[in-house]
Each structure stands twice: as structure tokens, then as C-alpha cells.
Image 1 (spheres, rainbow, N blue to C red):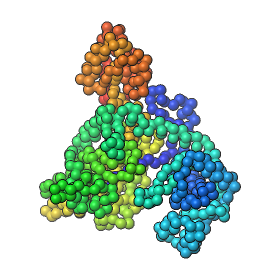
Image 2 (tube, helix red, strand yellow):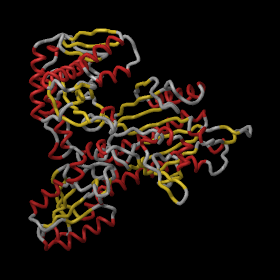
Image 3 (spheres, rainbow, N blue to C red):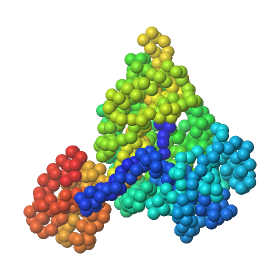
Image 4 (tube, rainbow, N blue to C red):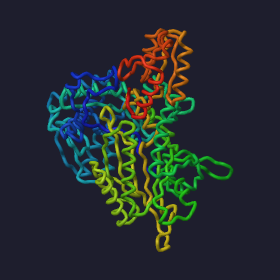
Amino acid sequence: MEEMAVATTDSTETAAAVSTGTGEDQITKEEENSLVVLPTNDSSENLLRIRHTSAHVMAMAVQKLFPDAKVTIGPWIQNGFYYDFDMEPLTDKDLKRIKKEMDRIISRNLPLVREEVSRVEAEKRIQAINEPYKMEILDGIKEDPITIYHIGNEWWDLCAGPHVESTGKINKKALELESIAGAYWRGDENKQMLQRIYGTAWESEDQLKAYRHFKEEAKRRDHRRIGQDLDLFSIQEDAGGGLVFWHPKGAIVRHIIEDAWKRMHIQHGYDLLYTPHVAKADLWQISGHLDFYKENMYDQIKIEDELYQLRPMNCPYHILIYKRKLHSYRDFPIRVAELGTVYRYELSGSLHGLFRVRGFTQDDAHIFCLEDQIKDEIRGVLDLTEEILLQFGFNKYEVNLSTRPEKSVGGDDIWEKATIALRDALDDKGWDYQTDEGGGAFYGPKIDLKIEDALGRKWQCSTVQVDFNLPQRFDITYVDSNSEKKRPIMIHRAVLGSLERFFGVLIEHYAGDFPLWLSPIQARLLPVTDTQLDYCNEITSRLKVSGIRAEVSHGERLPKLIRNAEKQKIPLMAVVGPKEVETQSVTVRSRFSGELGTMTIEEFISKIKLGIEDRISI
């Protein structure tokens, strides 16, 4: 995939008290009836103004308490705002002082005043207060005049707005400061380390309470904690940050995901590939990565007298396979797919569980087609995307169509044809979508799809990108009906994005409570005493032969065995006592449905198989 987004979530209008899973974790009807819908910056202009103004109020409070602090930038973000300061390290105690000072500023109901000044006047004012970061920010502002916002006549910053009319419009009981973090100026590790203060602001106290509930639920679902509790994966510092170790239980889930992915791709006419993890550096020079993507690539490896490069993308490899022979127009479309592991340089401070790693496996595919096939191929990708995501319980999406940016390659005619083809495919599909004018890649228009999880968070996963650049760089051609050489269209696409990130999203979506078909262990046999152990082992063997993932747990009293199975989120527990051995049966308890009663082994196996086949919990 030529351009792959990193792990992101976006806020959305969502109920703050949400279903927290299955079984004993479900919310009550009373809780469901008292849900508070959280607005977003996009849905509420007033909320956006409140957060932007809150950031300024926070910066003013910081500089009142710490006069030597230098301000940098302070944007609003999905659930609040932050500001970066060049100052001494802060503590949680300092946050409380800053919040009290903010409350005082809010209570004074100071007006927010917009002023336009010349660039010369802005430079003069910045020099007068000795704010070097503001001067650097001013240098990056290309428009004139320069806009300044004042809080009363006591504090100001370079800003384009918008803001509320006065500080009193902020509900101080719906505002809180959340945390402190370090951040490099301009994200450059060679520049000054700054103090970043995060805050959140809402229109009402009820919204703040709902947001706190949302945060607690998100914390409960954190894939890093669940991954450790359920022994799914780890990041081993002895091996290096950002490198994922899939443990047996996590690896079996990955196997299930990969198996379903491969099966559906073969059904949809894709050929599967496997390609190397390294290649000669010259390949990445041809592709342009060494010119435009080098900061995300690892240092080259010298092998004998040649330089090799760990791959950051799979695309050039798939092109080399295409180029192995001459193609005719009759061969198209050509669809190839690979679960290809790539390596990208990430700063240690940006690494985050499975969401931001240094080595990950993309569910990558490329389609080579003719111009008049673009629409049908894009529609086929959208159908396959929907089919795959539905398998894993995702049926709500946000879809964006991004069009030609100012700087781009390719002629007007092909850009127009490709954009119309993407738009028509979306219209045929019947999906609602937003258009991001000028937001496409320089090499072609694209469609991005974000999936919505159980908390209403949106995660960037699927992307479809038309590419006019790499076919030209690698000079790939085909012979048309007039025996002339022409250049094919190349389409990049991924459905899951990366297996690591998608697995992290799955863990948080289900809170580790995977559905039966996806669960690492589907059934656990629990002997009342060790006397029944041989019988339990016999049943477990029969279950495994039938393709059911089962295990035996013993050595504790039965109530403890049951509690342990609950903590490990095992879907089915089969209790075995003397009566069950005598009648060649098991007494089954479902994590999702409670007590299922006593049944024969054949009935138990049949019930599990039906649940797996129909993707339902029993």
C-alpha cells in the first residue's frame, strides 16, 4: 500500500453509556434509557469554540502562574484541547493550580477580541514579549493581515479563531485538565522538549460526566491491558520497541483472520503472493521512496558490495511480478494480494501497543486494470471490504472520497475519469460519503473507510487508491487491441489496514470477549475432581478432532475453575462430575447465555459447530 494511515480514532456522536460486552458486562435497561449523546467538534460549532477558547484560557493561566513559560501551539482535538509550553516540568499538583486560575479567568467573563494587524506590527509585538516560538509560527503564516485574539487586555496569541464571545461562556464545571506529556517542538526529536497539557471541555456537566464514563470504558477495553490479561501478545523490550510477539492465543486469532481473508480473496478472483522482506536499495530509488519517504525507512544494509533495504511497502514487489512477462489487454483485470510484513521507522515516544508499531503486516493488494475497468474494480473492492468487515462485526462506516491535490502527477483526463469512477462506484454501492476536495494523494484519488467500534470510535482501516505514478516510474505496459503498448491503471487497496492494528481494534471492540468462532479457546473442560480428568482429556481430544479449540483446566475447586474461565472470557465451560462420566455427557455453561444444561458429547460438538458456522454465540 503506497500510503497507509497510522492508527487513528475519531470522535463521533455516541452514547457514553454503551454496551460493555456480553454476559455479566451488559448494561441495564435503566442505564440504556439514560444515555447522554456526546457532541463532536464537527456536530457542534459552539463546542469547537468552547474548546478553542479553553485552550487560550489555559495558556493565559499558565503564564500568570509561570511567567517564564513560553507558549507554542494550542489546538482543539477530538475530545478537548492541548497547549505546548517551553517551561519547567509540571506536576499533577501544578495542574490543580492551573485549573483554579482558569476558573478565576472564566468567572471574570473577559471578552475575546479579534484584531487584525500587519506582519510588521505582529513581529514588533512578539519581540516585545520575547516569544520566540510565536515568531517561528508567524513565519509560517502566509496570509496577510495577521489575526490576533485577545482575552480582555491581559493576554493574546496569534490565532484565526473561532472563539466564544467571552470567557464566561465556558462552563468551568464542564472543563477539566487531564494530563501532562512531553512533546518535541514541531515533532522533531532534535528540537526542544516541551510540556504539553491536555484538557477537555464540554457544554454541560452531564456531558463531562458522560465523557468520564466513556474514558473509563475505553480504559477497561484497552487492548494493551487485555492483551496481557488474556496472554494474547507482547512487546518485548529485549527485542526492541514496536515489534510484536504473537503468543499462542493471539496467534490462533491471527490465523483465523488470515484464513478468512485468504479464502475470501481467492473467491473474489485474487492471486495470493509472498515476497521478500528486503530488496536492493535501487528498487526503492525507482519507486521514489528514497526521495519522498526516507525518514520513515530504516538504514540500508550492506550485503557484499550492494545495499539492501527493509521494505516499507509491498507495491514495488507486486510490480516486479507483473513485469515478469508481457501482458495483453485480454489479461485484465489482474488482482494480486499479500499479507506482507513491512517495517517503518517510528520514534519510541510515538509507539502505542498494536496501534503504532515498527513492524506490521498489511493486508495488501494491487489491481492492474484498464481505464474503463476502474469503476467495476472499485465496486468489487467495496463489496469485498463490506463482506470481510461484516465477518468481524463491523457494519457502520465513515467513508471519504479524496480528490486531486494541487501537486499531482498524471493528466487532467485520467484524473477526471478515475475520480468519476470512484464516485460512481460509491453511488452504486449506496454508501453515504463525504468529499475531501484536494485531499487525494499526489498519484491519484482515493477512498478511505473508517469503521465504528462498540464505543462509537472510528478507526481508519480500509483504503482504495488509484495510482498513476508507480506504473510510470516502473514503466509497466500492456499490449492493446491495436498491438500498441499502453500503460495500465494500478489500484492499491487494503481492507483491514494491518493485522496488528486490526487485532487491537478487535480486542477493544469486543473488550476481549471474542465471539465463539473467533475465540482463542472455545470450550474449557472443568472436572469436579481429578477423578474425572481422564474423561475430560478424552472429550478434549474429540473436540479438537472436530476442529474445536478446547482445553482442560483442573487442580482447583470447581468455583475457582469457573471464575478463572470467566476471567479468561472462555465462551463455553463444560463441567464434568461423576454423573457426567457415568452418562457420557457434559453440563454446559455459556458465558453469553448462562446454563445450557446437560447434553451428550455429540450434542455438544454439534451445537458448537453450528455456532461457529453461523457466527453466533451459544
